[in-house]
Length: 272
Length: 300
Image (cartoon, rainbow over all chains, first blue to last red; front, side, top):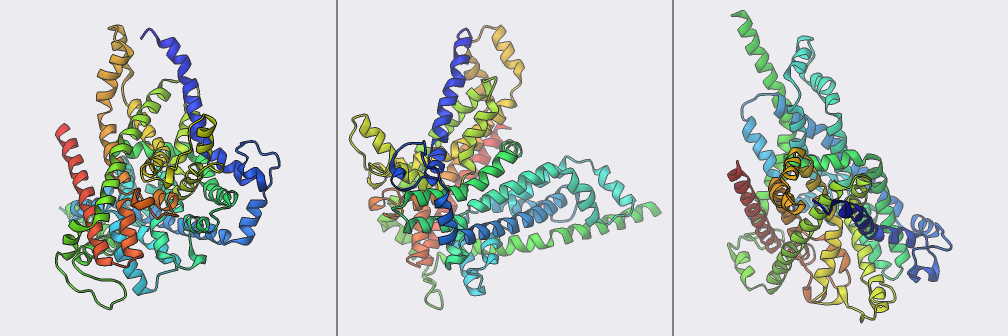
């Protein structure tokens, strides 16, 4: 370990240069989104006349505001449902005993192995028969509960001592209030990680929303972006503006909650 | 005695609540996960095409068709190309990043933030940005760089040979942060005492890496191999968007299995055959998961 001092000096520099290369596509996207006219193809990161005209055009002349709202609504519904049901299910597996518990737990976990691609054809069939095409329900119903979230929450509830919950029983609380009032506040960290994952995951989801929405006004942001870009295939500044609109909210969430996100990801690896 | 009876009723009362709690999720998993799975298997033995009212049972015909379907072979081998090249590269890069960031004293938080950012970004947005980078000159920046270095312009996404590589570049860029975070969590779990002991014994940095770090990161490697394999097997969004004009690269050169499934089901409406293709994908993923379980169990 003699060459330590030298490598230790070079290391951050290399990581920094490589980091700039990693950031380059983001910077390029954002800088192009505020360029106008001929400058778009100037191959310079520096923007001499920055303007938000592309954003104004995008939000007034396209369905982008609607797609943005659609993504927000779908993401919110799914996230709320996951927070409620996955944690309720995880809590029940961790803190309750009932016949068939082990079997049901294994079945729920095994759903993580079923690829979405296999389910979309039956889901589409159900949705078209039931009239769920082009509805929010159609977009959200497959993701309302997840094996992953159930497993994650079970792991967290498992670490809590039983005495806490028994204390509630002695006080005469019913089982539902015990879960809501005693259990939930103690797993806030896990809940926030789960909330971020499911919201970001749904915000970025592409395959199912692409299939279930046929009316332009019911697209989610990624679907809208993909099809809009097909039409604007020569106006790269508009495509980069659309990509920025899809990316910026997630990056803001990421910068605010990066500790929870990174710890949550690391946890899935350790426990997985 | 009295106490025991009371406890018994309490336990039964608790069990009732438990069933109430799981009732809605159990119905959900049955209707939205298990029933559709079985239905996909059923459809794979039919010729259902959405337009006709009913599906006819055609036995193994869809599976027999796989053997003579050239596009199936192309897309399957493209998919394995993504796994076989993408997985080792992204695990290697992810490890190198984690190993070096772990050793940096200042700025490790900043590096983590930067390298992980692409992972949480919308794949559709990522694909369009990369598609732009790969455009011919004067639009695409990569070609401009090549030309300024005196290298002739490349076809990239419009080339049979290069399209898969372009897609891999974008995919690895977007996923490497995940690999890095998992490795960093693994590195954090290794006790510093091992390294201190190695240093006292005069072990080189390379030997410390070879005999301490790598063996103790075994679980991280296995986890990433499995999740990574599944991720690369299911590659779809980036290909659809990056090769939008050619629909999977020229001559299907970049088309993965999932895009073929999508085209078969939702462009040709050949639902029966598409279901058979999804069953193949399911079996591949299942086999890989079972191998993982076997490997991790042996270790215990």
